[in-house]
Amino acid sequence: MALRIYQFPTSMFCEKVRITLSLKNIPYEIVDARQDDRKALIEFSGQKKVPVLDFNGQPVIDSTVICAFLEEKYPQPSLYPSNPTDKGLCLVLEDWADEILFKSVHMMRSKELPEVQKEGERLLHINLQMLEQWFSGDKEFIFDRITLADIAVFVELHYLYTSVKTEVPAQYRNVHAWMDRVCRTLNLSSLDDIAA
Image 1 (tube, rainbow, N blue to C red):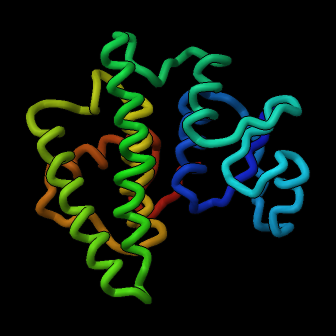
Image 2 (cartoon, helix red, strand yellow):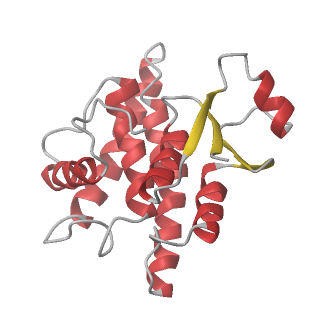
Image 3 (spheres, rainbow, N blue to C red):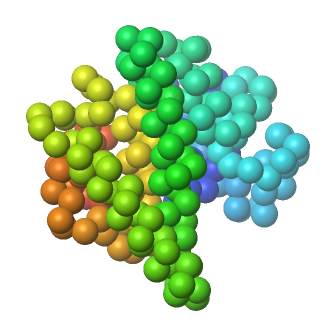
């Protein structure tokens, strides 16, 4: 039986799980939790948060927990660095993307509150400056290959294109080059495509 993911198509956390499933070549089915106003999701998991993975009847909740769970159950190909120190940094960067980068991107959605949106833009530029430095030099990905750190950062920035309808400013050339490499790795034809 294929795994099932309760999700919303445009959620960056759901996209993170879909990318993980795809890179690990794990077959899965999608349940759009909005179709029945989350009733099936609540009945299955006892809560309203997405994504939720249905692993043979066992609910696994939260994108970070789901990705770690999938890594344990399906270790190849690994989406974590093999070096323990790098793995620790990968987990820190995943959390940074999910909490700090997410906040700035989420604030940019607040078109009805211009002061909140402006603060989101300010915070995003601080985060992009850090990423621009990170990707200087000859790094293709954050580590020696694509990892969960790349995925977590990518889905946040990707959300700018798919949902906020804005772009990473052109001045961040290293970030753009990295995003292009991630797009190619995920077989996305453009940043407007949503990873399935």
